[in-house]
Image (cartoon, rainbow, N blue to C red; front, top):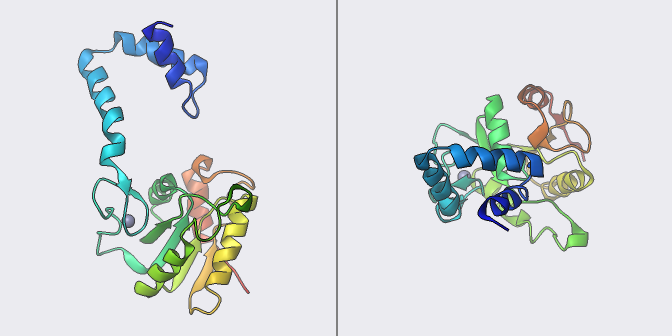
Length: 197
Ligand SMILES: [Zn+2]
């Protein structure tokens, strides 16, 4: 396998890239200027050293605490729970939310051995007490696992004086928030549903 085939093969393993797009990118890189290729190579090789989960919320950051946690103007009593760090970006793009986040880095999946402990859900409870959170907005994906995670969180906060709501309308059922458009998520935020016990 020559270097070109190897690059295509590596790129094609990435999400959303088939062999065809991987090929198009590789041929493009062969003609790009050296500075670009060097910067790209460096950015890729450094990313895991430079970016880590925020110690507070789990969002990706290049400092110990992410920009959102470090921002004193964010509303500390509103907390939005998401599955993945990229969901934070998706919600930030709507401009609808000025509170803080909690990134689970997954969902409850008992069959894969991911229970409340693995997901650090006690941590969520501890944080919300610390910040005296008044409202928790659960923005897990509308999938089976996302739903049961939302239900678990709702039960976890049963005895707390916290309003629990869930993004609902506008998100495609069984879909992934990553693929929903900004407008749908913004609308979904405004029309979030309060979860009742
Ligand atoms: Zn953070």
